[in-house]
Length: 282
Image (cartoon, rainbow, N blue to C red; front, side):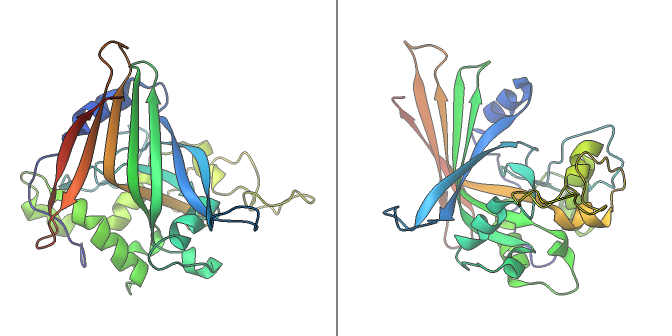
């Protein structure tokens, strides 16, 4: 847990329990994830244009969802957070976008292979079963295999500072901090994926032209069960969303519809903060 900033025991975000309850009723916890992409040509009046795609919510960072089929080593329950996660492929555009719009503004392919990022993002969840919309605005960070390498890159330090700063120690976790590992958490997320999903990280490079047959290591429809498959793991990433603003819009009853906005206000002195709630018209 070296180079990680985190907080002592503190309450969960006031929106957390309702959000997780709504996630639990969705047949598949899908959401729209938006990033910024450099404007492809001069016809756009702004330097960036939006890019959106559907992703699958994979639980809160440091609170890996239980999965009886996952035989990966598990971290002890040391930390909690209000940081939603999803998995992706490093070859997807969203990874480069989160690096390219971050403070570091990484642009070259070799600069986006490790941990880092921090570009702006939004995530929108529509829970049809409850008539609820959740919108999260903030930044997103990439957790890659280098997260616990022999040398810490600037990207690794950024992730451990920005993500770690929102991780809080659970009651009774103080004596187990040394047993918690970023790399173990990353592998746990890989293990929580199905063999077919793991195999997708051995697909041909996403978005590239179809020209002939791909090589034998990059084929569609593969199934992977090895937790340390070198090709799949080299492409596998976990994305951690760090929300600064969360909106819960209840549209279940037109006569009582409301929007609740939660804004995270950080304390510059100790890095801690609190969520401020406002009730708004929808």
